[in-house]
Amino acid sequence: MNMPGIAKMTFRAAARAAATFATFIVAACASHSSGDESGVASGTAALGAPVTISLTSPNPVPMLSPVVDVSNSMFVGAGAEILAGPIAAMGSNGGGVHAEPDALLNDTWSRGTADLRDRVKVRGTLHAANRTLGNSVVINASDRTPHFDPPKNLS
Image (tube, rainbow, N blue to C red; front, side, top):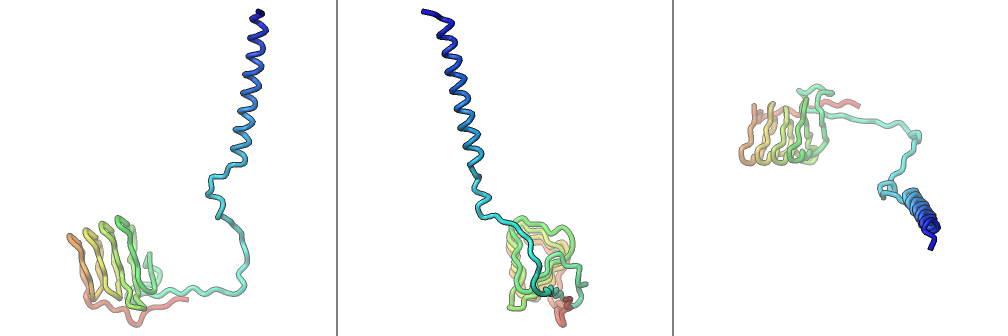
């Protein structure tokens, strides 16, 4: 029995197996998609017509100061924090501000009912005639007769 020959064949077989394995890995990685790309597309196109963006805010609030300004109702998630500036829910259809537990708000304008869940903190003034308050809600200042009308508009 010739040992060097067996060792040589074993090395060749191992090298061939390693090369085959590496080829399969490269082919699998090249053809595999994470799945995230399937619904993603990008592109650019010119607008066909001019677009008008309109902002509406409560009368006493400067037009560009709200950080969130919605035409109807607003939902603030649990633990969310508004870092700077007021928020305004103009409530065109009776909507107001709804804040989930532990949200931190600044000045808050709500034409509809302000629904503040447990431990919400309003660091500024809550401007809302109607409110529903959860447990341990903290409101720095309160305005029960806010002046929404006539609203300011910017287009």
